[in-house]
Image (tube, rainbow, N blue to C red; front, side, top):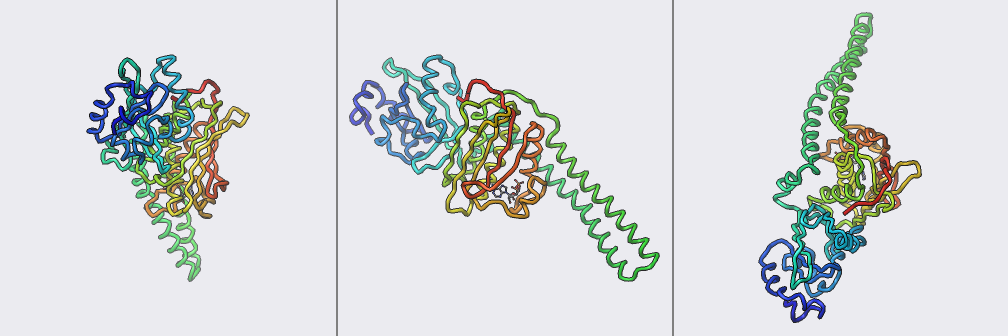
Amino acid sequence: MNLTSSGPAALKSFGGLDDLHALIDTVPDAMIVIDTTGQILSFSNGAERMFGYAETELIGENVSVLMPSPDRERHDSYLEHYIETSERRIIGIGRVTTARARDGATFPIDLSVGEVNLNERKAFVGFIRDLTDSKETEQQLHSLQADLAHVSRISSMGMMATSIAHELNQPLTAITNYTEAARDLLDEPNEESIAHVREALNECAAEAIRAGQIVQRLRSFISRGETTREIVSLARVVKEATALALINGDARDVDFEVMLDDADDRVLADPVQIQQVLVNLIRNALEAMDESTVKKLVISSHNNDDNMLTVTISDSGPGLDQHVAEHLFHPFISTKASGMGLGLSICNTIINAHNGKIWAEPSPLGGTDFHFTLISAKGDTNNG
Ligand code: ADP
């Protein structure tokens, strides 16, 4: 596409874009050039493939059409803020975030933005890499450094959980053996057999206590008193968690919406741990909707008037299995073939350590609402 011949008149003054475009199209990742008002000046071949739009459809449109809410509504103000203050929140920095394709699918991206002067007019160039199904996902995750340090934490918890599950087998096997022996001994009750039954039951009780201690070890490992509380932007934590949770691409057909209370964005929390909670809850919601025809996931927040903020993850899945609902947040409760049943108990431990509460109830969307509360630290919104 030749911008000089088919682009809107206002954009023609950006001379040199033809050359730039030829250059851009040689790059496999998406590159998008916008002016200072957010209007798209150029949309590379890579971007056409990634977003499903033709360049001709988007030239002159606002770049926010490529973003899910709430960035879609807020992008103009992010740009205005930068133009006014030159305060860099993304330009020259880059970050993992989410994008929205033509078909409404939300997907995780690695976005870097550079600033250029084209014919003495300022423009921004966005370089976008789709992180969905990326073979380099693991490598990418590692390069996300401190903010995403919890990834290794999750995997070390996974390893810990496997070894604990193994350890738990011992007391459970012992309990099975003792109870079977006791039952058989009761076939011909006499003084001696009753004494043996008593002994077997004592052993059972001791083994059950041992099993409880093993589980307790896991809980204290998870909450190892490492919670560092700081005032953080909930919107930012949600954005990063969302990008992470969407990384393996199973949410492409999910209608994903984030509706956070702008007026109350600041919470007192360990951002890494809260991201962990969000990633767990989002992944669970996505997995629950695997077979659903309507797939809708909404993350919302509201203030409770009691200095706490409630965050809700709602899905349109099948709702909670009854057995799971009765033991929700207990470890090792799972309906999944490969599930460890630890996600929710970890969430519970983390939220309790933050002096919050976590609970579930049927969702107006038809599936499940998971709510958790965090201490609100009222202040200015800063989600850029
Ligand atoms: P896991 O995901 O390993 O099974 P979790 O503790 O995260 O462990 O979840 C426990 C169980 O809770 C899941 O196996 C599933 O049955 C149920 N569950 C969790 N979230 C949802 C949800 N959003 N909708 C329906 N069921 C859910």
